[in-house]
Image (tube, rainbow, N blue to C red; front, side, top):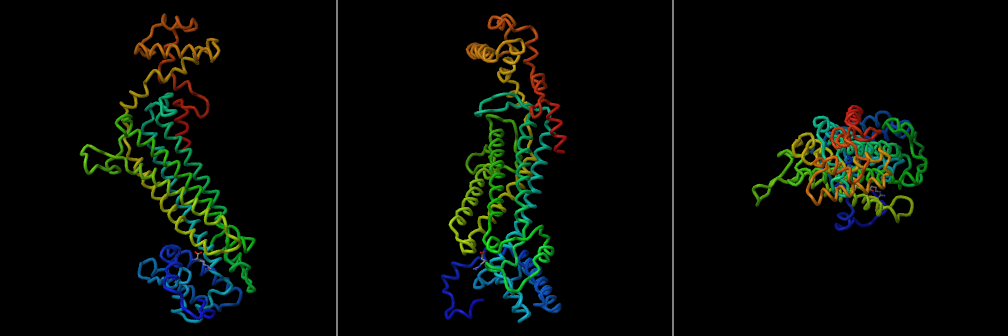
Length: 450
Ligand code: ARG
């Protein structure tokens, strides 16, 4: 492509070091779409005749079909996807193909390809986020009566509906979808026409190209357009946050599937055994999801670090953006998909959940609230119930084993209606503020998500 200027061929080591076709071949569809749109702008500018443009468009279409079918041979000597496709076009149709790169550089071309690719992938990821939300909501709906302990510091805190716990993840995933929708606006800006750095003396109708490719806007500064990768950073950040959510879900599922908790059973189809211990059934999908989150964070930091020292405008360092981008996109898609499938096959062990959720200790705060309603200041009520807890811990009795006289020896504010407070369903139904887990609230939330 630059043979005019050079007397020597590139050294083998140099071209091996510089090639990107081994990974950026994945942009082929977008490179071809972009080139066809570009050829239409060249036609409108009078650089191509209608016949030439038609020849370019149909030949690019054929090349695209061959690439999709796996029949196309990529040549590493041609460095990247852009030159592989253009060289093949020119090999097939001669000088007309050589006109295609008019008023274009690989700098604006790669920016375009990346935006087209990420726009499509952002939509695909968002759809998978919705899929996992659906699986979680369905698991919640199927187990609407199940109560488990809610945990803080991984110690039993207060009872909650299992569905309430799952719907917390549905909320997180909704924010993930919101972040994807937001970054999509910044991806959806068309950079072609920026050339290498300073546009071109051959003025193309950039709005036409944007319309052809369905972009909502065009970039307004050629230097920014070829050096901007903010949109990719934002997407990798959104993916990293979604990964963090999946990792926390994984941790909960791993705990719940353990013999110690025993709240859920993960299907055999999404578990693995041990090569040594015949009894083992391991939650590997969740562990892998937790582990892969590290990669997602790494990819974000990798891209930010690649960009941080670059003077304007394009620098070859930017070729290093692709592998972390591809890896994050692939990883989050796979994680969302497999987790949605796994979650939809989870079975809940209602007996084990009831055993844990029925721990009367979890209603200690409700007892304090009872005293507050009888006029006791909360701090004092807290101390009284604290003593009651200490009494239960030392005697091995549960709150529900105590008689009214024992309770009244600690506070005269206790009346015979206190035992109602210790009824689990009653306790949950009392939690009626928006966002709190009364059964009516949880059902209303499920309905909202549906
Ligand atoms: N493969 C290159 C990349 O991914 C394409 C742009 C190359 N531009 C250049 N001036 N060498 O960034």
